[in-house]
Structure formats: C-alpha cells, structure tokens
Amino acid sequence: MRLSRRGLLAGLGSLALPRAALAIEQHRFPVAIGARRIAAFEPRNPEKRRFGPLTFRGGLALSCGHPRFGGFSGLWRSADGRELVSVSDRGYWLTAKVAAEGGRPIALADAEMAAILGTSGRPLTRSGLYDTESLCIANGVAYVGIERRHAIVRFDWGAQGMEARARSVPVPAEIKRLPRNRGLEALGVVPGGPLKGALVAVAERSGKHDEPTLGVILGGPKPGLFKVARHDGYDITDLAFLPSGDMLLLERWYQPLRGVGMRIRRIAGRDLKAGALLDGTYLIEADLGFEIDNMEGLSVHLEDGRTILTLISDDNFSFLQRTLLLEFELA
Image 1 (cartoon, rainbow, N blue to C red):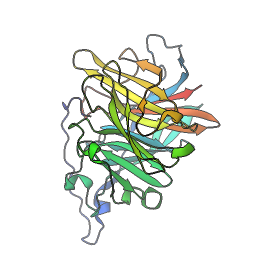
Image 2: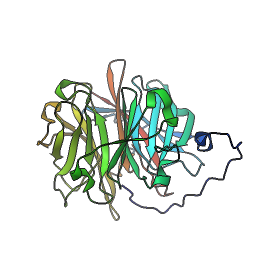
Image 3: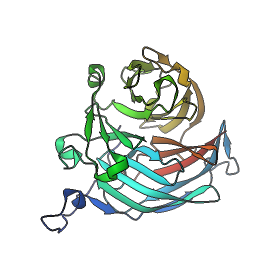
Image 4: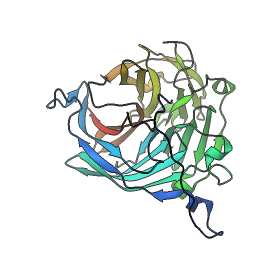
C-alpha cells in the first residue's frame, strides 16, 4: 500500500543497444547500495537486544542514487541467508548478496535491479499490472502479488531468475472483488503438514476498521478462503512461514499525525484451513521510538539452526522515509 508520494521518480534514460539485443538487457542494471549500520533497535535503550521472543541482530539503512531504487514491499532470502530478493511496488526486482560480520548484516553486495517481465517479455507495468506488493520463492518458483489488480503471477525463478516471464495464477472471484489499494499484500508457501506446497495469500484489509481480512489457500489438497482477525487498526503487510508450519504475519498501522507502527503475529499452522478465522499471539510491537519505518516485507531462513527473521521497509520513494533492513533471531 502507498502511504505518501512526496518523492518524484525520474525516468530512466534509454540505453544504446544493438537492435538484436534482448528486451531483458534494456531493463536490467547493477546498482551500488550504501548501507549505514543500525546497532540498536531501540535508540533510547541501546544496550537492549531482547524484545519478547525476538533478539535484535542488527540492521541497515540502505541508500542508492538510482531513481528506481526504493518502494520495496516483498522480501525473500535463500536458505542460508546469503541471497536476497525483493520487489518494489513500481514493478522491479532487486537481487543482492548479504554480507555479514559477527552474525550481523553489514552490507549488500553485487546488487542488480531489473524490470519484472510480463508474459510477452515486456515490463509487467506496460500491461497495466503494477503495484507489485508481495513476494515469496519456493521450490524454484517466485510468486508476486499485484495489489491493485488483485492478481498473482508466477515466475520460473530457479531456471531464469530476473529474466523469467510472468504466468498468471488463477484466484477465486472473491479475491478479485477486494477493495482498491487493499489487496494481496502477503504471500507464502506452506512448508509442511497437510497443506504442504499450497500458496497462501492474505489481503491488507478487506473490510472496515478492525474487521477480519480475507485470505486464500491456493492449490494443495484443501484450497479455499479463510479470514484473519485484525486488531487496533493494523493492516497486514506480509507473511512468512516458520519451519514448524506456523505462520508469521507482519502488520503495520499508519496515521498522518502519529506516524507508523509495526508488529509481528504468530498463528499456529494447525489452525490454517479453509473457513477458519485465524488469530494468534504477538511477538513484537514497535512505533517510531524504535528503528522502524513503513515495514512491508518479511522473510524467514535458518542459520546454523537458528531461526532468522528479516524485515524490509517501503520508503514510498519519499525523502522523508527510509529503506531499512532489520534482522531478528526467534528464540
């Protein structure tokens, strides 16, 4: 979801390439990303590392002079945490390697961006499919949620990476009727159990204030719709599954005069089923007294047996906001 569009996005100049060059090459480019380390999650209490069941490992405030950099709303990290993939809500991929030191992130290296390609091989945005807000990658397939069109597309990521072309994923009619700019903000693939391999999507907000929001299970042995309880004005911005099968929901509230807040909720995997109303316990909650911004992306990976949560923020291409990458360990 877009919160504020104060920044202006400059267009890319055309590249002088031979006529035989692939369209992919015209829309793929390296980017140099600066990273300022964040040592404390709560600046007023810099020695504090533990926040409920989460331990803050470190973070980065990312910066880049390229006009396409920013607006990151979906996040994935490889099983070892070394590779990072994100999508911007302007229809671009970001890939990078995460450099670490002493168990803390220190930089992003070998970063590239590329236009997300539609079925024809042209940028997805040229077909009217834009506002790419959610991402998950599982079994070599990348899934991307397109909020304003209430659509999901898939890519053969394992074989083609950023050069892969979109293929449509069918969704129920109820998903197509979601409110404008309140669509699919969260995607994940169930890692195990009776729903193993099913794609799960949750809408940011499908009803009025604090009404449950709509979710869907796609594929697998038991597809169908479900709902997620909402509390305190928080909207859903992403999800990720723990190895146990429990689902983590990243949530965010925003008010122009109060700022922004975020929290993470854990929902038991056994409760995820068609027809269910899901709810769970909160692992962490933070406002602008902490090092957060408009947190919209969440991923989970294992590192030497430890469960690591990574969050990324959408700066809305505004000079008033930041692109943050935060790491926590789940006890």
